[in-house]
Each structure stands twice: as structure tokens, then as C-alpha cells.
Image 1 (cartoon, rainbow, N blue to C red):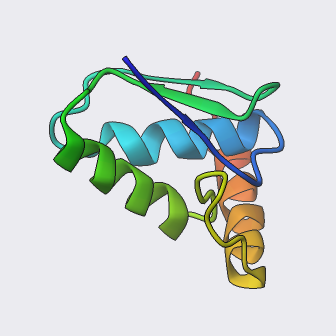
Image 2 (cartoon, rainbow, N blue to C red; image 1 turned 30 degrees about the horizontal axis):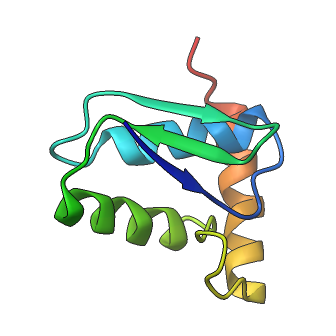
Length: 90
């Protein structure tokens, strides 16, 4: 398991968007998101897959802690959050 701590994770809607976005990456079979700690857990230790996950997270508005958190990232995270709330995983 690999843990990635991200920015802009606010709620379950955000978590749903993150899960759906990351599970679509080839080589990922399981994704868990902890909203309280802003951590994403993926079932890969392959560096190339992890790099793809980090790029995908950033493109959705959830950059890794330590990366730039621009106004564009924040705006994208709000859109991702709203989308995640409308498309719950249940």
C-alpha cells in the first residue's frame, strides 16, 4: 500500500471523485480515501503508477502536500467535490 497526502480534500464528495479518478488508472485495484487525514491509500508500490496517480490527483484539483496549490487546483477541487456529491458511490 502506498499513502499520498493531498490538499483540498474537504468531504465525501471529494473522496468519491478521487476514488473514481484513481481506480481508472491501470494497475490500481483498490483506493481508500481518509477525509479526516487527507490521505489516499492505493494498492501499488510501482513508481510509474504512483507518478500517474499523483498527476491525476493534481489534475483533479488535489495536489500532493508539498506541491503548489494554485487557484486553479482549488477551483478544480470545488468542481470535483460537487461532481462527487452528485455521483455517490452507492
